[in-house]
Image 1 (cartoon, one colour):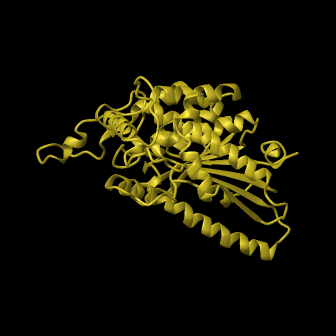
Image 2 (cartoon, one colour; image 1 turned 45 degrees about the vertical axis):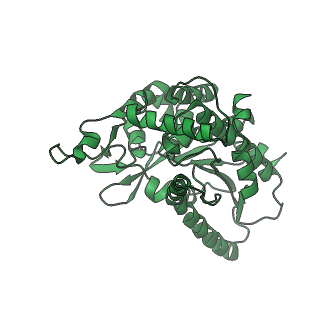
Image 3 (cartoon, rainbow, N blue to C red; image 1 turned 90 degrees about the horizontal axis):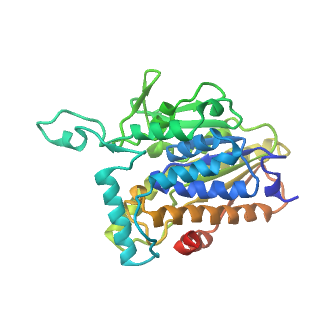
Length: 362
């Protein structure tokens, strides 16, 4: 029996899903590959679009999870005819036009304009704290997620937020409290794009700036015995050298959202090196780390690019990367260590990113 075939059956699986707005179809593609292998997580930890994805998975029967994820992203797309290939100026223009369209008109079922919003920057207008209203997302969640089922905690779901006043991490968990659409809305409220959400007297927002991939959560209270954690994030610390102002801006965005993961990983390495010395035969944690490596067609505004080509490309990239990651898990050395960290090489990530729309549109 391979290591991947034991996941979810003989060994607990924790799935950690990061934030990234329109990049989130990568998470759905990664989950589709898991479900095709009949692998289901026992615990999902998510922030922002990772929390939305986790809620759709945990709040539906296994046979409905993938159709509901597809419905979410089909509705999120900006409907335009045809798909375009990668790596051309035409594709850059195509992506940028879809980004501008989303910012100008919003996305039905996700977000729309609010008043005064951006107009509040004018001296004679009343103050506001956000540009867009993301209450339409609440209606979408109420339609696509069975919150009664979610709160039965067949799959444990932990959602990350940040207290906007104190900067503290705030976690909500369906094994400790009843989760509602408002909890997920709070996790997706990236400031100042969307307004914060007040829950239990605290003003909460998206954890993206401080802990976009809440990888520390499952390691703070790990399952008993050996377990595997799959961490899927939507920004990569690795990239080619920027060749334009747009790519430099995209790179800065990636560094902001991906850097906390590196610090978390360094901390886990130090912690488990100490565990190795004190208790070498203790439970083993296997950490499989995936990151969306943006292809050359992606632009600085990629998190608001809801074009059909981009959504489908990212979904296909998630499938490919999860397939390669599971193969990496199966081929891991038999040597037992307290922490086994596995990740695709930069070359594998780049090749997957550049595979293009052919796989998505085949």
